[in-house]
Image (cartoon, rainbow, N blue to C red; front, side):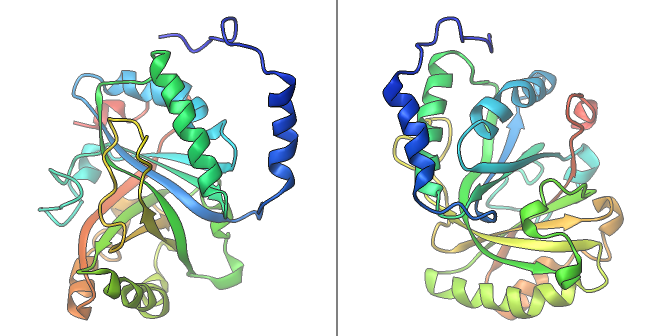
Length: 289
């Protein structure tokens, strides 16, 4: 696989360069995470190290960060002991519940989802054609999302969600909640935002929780990525932790499923803790199985 094709790529035309000046001159460009790409991936056994190097050395940049309107990204990893902390055991998201060693999260500028989607589809089609897509992996959960809410533990005193992927958080927990129908999701969001999350965040190691609604992938998405489930019924939460998630269990991060069920507002389908990867290294690769 080569990551240096600039010798054979056609040069940009004057019209191409003019478009670069025209596109950012209109439309929103606020500095806040209006959308997110959240992707949970399982490298196939025996290919963990190769996957890690491909994703970090090539795809994280060429397949994401080099694109317009992505302004922050971070990779996370679940070692075997972290995988074993996940619940519920019978998850409809991860089958088995331990599937998905690597999680990557990206923030996209509010209002720029459609423009970014056109770019990312075209880029990934080119990467696939050029042999720069790693095949020995499975997408457990890959979806773009619209931002729905952010709840802070410390109010204005803490880092904003804009900076959450750059701040040196010690861990992250991915939580996925499904409701029985679209009419129930608004009630679930209001309950989380106004009641449950503020109470849970108080005196916890989580500084903030971001809440997102998944959006459908386009028809011309890459064939190895499944269409998103729960577009009208699901909420995806990211808990940003100031301590290792192993320390946060069981006091702070267990029982999330029981609380949602008791409220009669939905079903927690996945609670999965991660720690940040160390860029430029293969740290944790030997602790995945």
